[in-house]
Length: 382
Image (cartoon, rainbow, N blue to C red):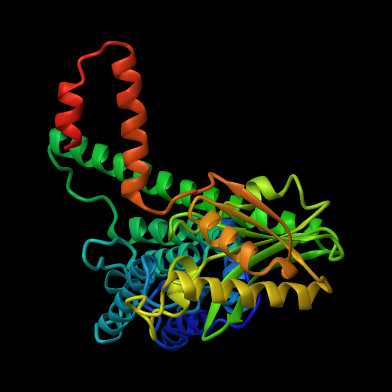
């Protein structure tokens, strides 16, 4: 959760508040009579939810547009809910402004004036990965939607009873729908709250060290790095992920946590992948700047950045799989900048044919030594 002004949150709030201000001069007849019967418990939930959602929508920059990615669909649906909310109000303001007009459904959504903004802000919380928004909208929804469902029942009164099988089917469908929505809301809140709690835990733990998730200018691109450590004077380890393209900055803390008392770790989404790719997708959508040599040059720029920032003469390079190709080549080329090299799943020959050939010849020799029939094995390899 990144503190900062959210223009998306401001837009959503304006779309919420402006129709409500107009509504204060266009309330349905007898509306105040219904207000007197409102549940005090639901009213408390509504007020608490409003007190959480309104400032949170403005205070976290996570809600702002981050470029085209998977989560854009969530933001788009959230915006669609707010557009439907505006349509709901336009229809109401053009009506006779009765309580029945006020509680007409839209696209089958009951009490749309209460339901649509709650869904929109909940989805905004998912898009921004903000647990406070999710919790706030759940509390708001229980109070706000609950109050208006109560009013709606009072407005429409008892309807003509449908046949028993139809009522049973309708009741089952409503229960299943409610369970699915509750499960979705609960799982989303749990996962995002867990991520936020982990981030907060690290922020507290490293308050005297470093806990940065930032973009650093490496040659012609800004590229993503995560830096964690309890003491800025500790040796710096630059961790190079595998793939190429298997960015691991989002999980590296799982093992780095055990070592941050002795080392400062820099995890890096290499050029062309992860958040570094998305950061530069507008100018290099097809990764035309990507090559082994360009990544080596980026790594050299990152080493210089780390040495300068932390007052070090050298760094430790640690490479995993493809990262071991990048790391070992760099360590051999720049021994003056590397105090130690650690290879994990070390690649020793980049030629796929050479690796396959070695494995095949080794297996063939063992099979022949055992007296096995290797006819099918040789035919398959050919």
